[in-house]
Amino acid sequence: MATGRSTQHNPNPAAGTRRSRGRGIPDATVARLPLYLRALTALSERSVPTVSSEELAAAAGVNSAKLRKDFSYLGSYGTRGVGYDVEYLVYQISRELGLTQDWPVVIVGIGNLGHALANYGGFASRGFRVAALLDADPAITGNVVAGLPVRHTDEMEEIIRSERVSIGVITTPPGAAQQVCDRLVAAGVTSILNFAPTVLNVPDGVDVRKVDLSIELQILAFHEQRKAGDEYRDDDGPTEADADAEVPSAPAAAVVSTPERAVAPGHGHGHEQGQEYEEAAG
Amino acid sequence: MATGRSTQHNPNPAAGTRRSRGRGIPDATVARLPLYLRALTALSERSVPTVSSEELAAAAGVNSAKLRKDFSYLGSYGTRGVGYDVEYLVYQISRELGLTQDWPVVIVGIGNLGHALANYGGFASRGFRVAALLDADPAITGNVVAGLPVRHTDEMEEIIRSERVSIGVITTPPGAAQQVCDRLVAAGVTSILNFAPTVLNVPDGVDVRKVDLSIELQILAFHEQRKAGDEYRDDDGPTEADADAEVPSAPAAAVVSTPERAVAPGHGHGHEQGQEYEEAAG
DNA sequence: ATGTCTTTGTGAACGCGTGCACAAAGATGG
DNA sequence: CCATCTTTGTGCACGCGTTCACAAAGACAT
Ligand SMILES: NC(=O)c1ccc[n+]([C@@H]2O[C@H](COP(=O)([O-])OP(=O)(O)OC[C@H]3O[C@@H](n4cnc5c(N)ncnc54)[C@H](O)[C@@H]3O)[C@@H](O)[C@H]2O)c1
Ligand SMILES: NC(=O)c1ccc[n+]([C@@H]2O[C@H](COP(=O)([O-])OP(=O)(O)OC[C@H]3O[C@@H](n4cnc5c(N)ncnc54)[C@H](O)[C@@H]3O)[C@@H](O)[C@H]2O)c1
Image (cartoon, rainbow over all chains, first blue to last red):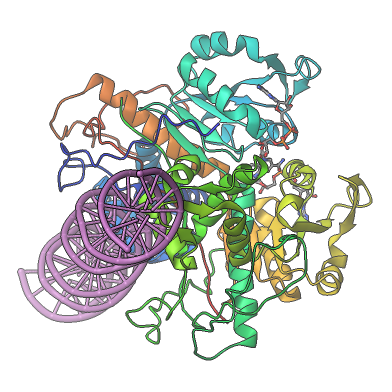
């Protein structure tokens, strides 16, 4: 499984110091644009004509300076002393994100999660049209889910080509994910949203984003444990009382509650939620 | 809705320059530990005794230097010339993440997504026990999902207290999310995994992580559009041909395919997948 | 014991992202 | 037309995260 094909990480000598010349929007900004768009859409529905960076930032849960800087990458769409025109900004962000066009997607693996995604209305509301649902199990294919028939993966290549699908969603068991990914990519898909807990190897030019519930919970558990530890041990001292273990026979599933990880209390503001993201240009 | 309670971002003058004194593990590292753990667990199941940073990094899809630095925050668990003991590392990371104890979780909102999560085996496999499924709809409460009865949200507080639940998962419609969040927090939950597309306001000391499928797709669409644009327009030039729009009447759902966003081709390696994460110490 | 070879652990440099703070821009009122 | 007030747009500094590159550490063979 862990074969290779490696992950490319050459710093691209051609790009040099600057961002990708002129108007390359920072990734961190791109990741926030949907957040702004959501807040703006809500304002738009309430017929609010303009909004200040402060108000919009509060609605989106970000710093107002950050928001202004983000918008500055898109151009100067605000009016000093007034704020931003809501409708105009909705359009500009939509355009920047590519939401002014229709994006057909396929969902592969119509089990528990695939069902939920197929039924999710938030798909279509942003221009993501479910072009097809695919599964390898003959007991599932033919079923109608969310108004769409589940097609067999044999038809994958044909569907992707005829429907011009460039985005694929993988909700198969982890063991099948790489294989499904390879087929999707071979058929022409260049963006993949992966829900299976596996590292996907893809060729250059293909984007992979992953959603991993288990990882999210583990990160929460880490902070939760740290909080619990702080309750017991609130003062200083690096606390060496831990390197005792000797490859225990039963490492998991036991209420141990070791309060040995003492970190400075009250370390303030939020930290980020980072995950890997593979990408490369063709 | 966009009331306030604000997001706190005071740089915490007490912490100063250093990380939180001694052994504060960087957030970026914490976010990768589950990834390493997954790869190590797979190796463990194949009875692989040791693994080098290079091999493990490939399996986890990260840079090997990054992996070594990450492990250095946990301590020196490797042997030079040999690598890392798989079992020992599995235990150390599990302990660091707090997975050596049991974490009861409640899922609120047993609709499409809540069903899928309740049926998901990856929960229990890492020590996250579903303590209860909660819903506000009397037509749903009482149903048995994944072997558990769906309880009414009236029982929320009692369940959280008696089961000592500290982690809550919100899979309600966005309109109910803040209200559910407030109740969870009031009842004692201090970590929340939010699937509803809403910004949650929480008091200090409560962690929120969010999973937003729609945002992921929009980020993919951005890069997809960029790729498509590069095909048409591969050379330089900032291309001013865009600031034409005049708050169009129908901004969405139309195959526009505007190739005006030209970014340097071949910009190399991956970028990050960042989302907000609120946290604060009590 | 000594040398060789592999691999870790980390110092240092660099780039990205964030947030402060403020000047410039423009609206608004007189 | 001018003064005032609001809010944008951004220069700047700082800290975090990533990656390179290499010395030190230890295994292993002779
Ligand atoms: N259910 C959740 O809440 C949840 C949460 C996080 C992650 N995940 C992950 O999402 C994935 C799906 O989870 P699930 O609970 O829906 O699993 P599931 O077993 O219910 O569904 C998997 C589906 O994939 C199909 N499938 C298997 N091999 C295939 C192949 N080669 N090509 C096409 N289809 C194939 C199966 O027939 C099945 O219908 C898993 O990898 C799981 O780890 C699920
Ligand atoms: N289904 C998906 O694939 C998907 C994907 C991404 C995001 N989401 C988001 O996840 C959330 C749930 O999606 P869904 O498709 O499962 O919706 P759903 O409508 O199927 O389920 C929502 C459930 O929440 C319950 N609920 C409503 N108000 C409640 C309250 N105050 N307290 C407790 N329960 C309450 C409802 O009774 C219902 O059972 C939504 O916010 C949605 O936007 C869903």
